[in-house]
Length: 173
Ligand code: ADP
Figure (spheres, rainbow, N blue to C red):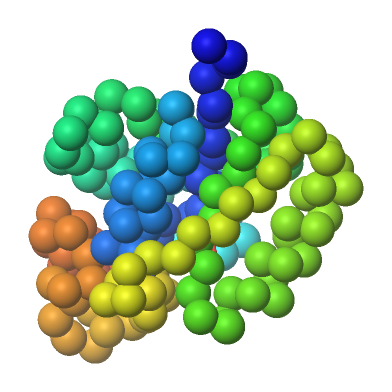
């Protein structure tokens, strides 16, 4: 048997959505060990702290069926993705692809990453039709405006988002 295949699924996960959960499930069928890499990404001014985003991911991983969760790790990172990938001896970067909107950005990033390390392959996965249109950005917007986000995110995440926004409202009141 060869080396275990290690894949990294990087993102901001602010917060994790059903789209991410779908991609994580597919990822576990492709790699032996899946490392979900949570980007600190302060430039994006995330709603949730890095620690909260990691906690929400860990919670969803622990709820995964078939024991797949045992092959998944969640780790924060704040360096160049390719350096993080190399540190962990990973050979695959997993990314999700939504319709046409993600293509341009993902195409450029995969191209640059290949130039940085040709030994690392980026693999794109599509979520099931029902989850494809979900984006963390819109989930936050819908929640902020009082909409129901329960069909876009896991229920634990919906509850946390509601609490977070209520906290923020109190802060700015
Ligand atoms: P980033 O800040 O890198 O865009 P995100 O947390 O938004 O991070 O997403 C991480 C990865 O998951 C990206 O490759 C993104 O395209 C993918 N993704 C997010 N939502 C979906 C979805 N609904 N279906 C498929 N892929 C998705």
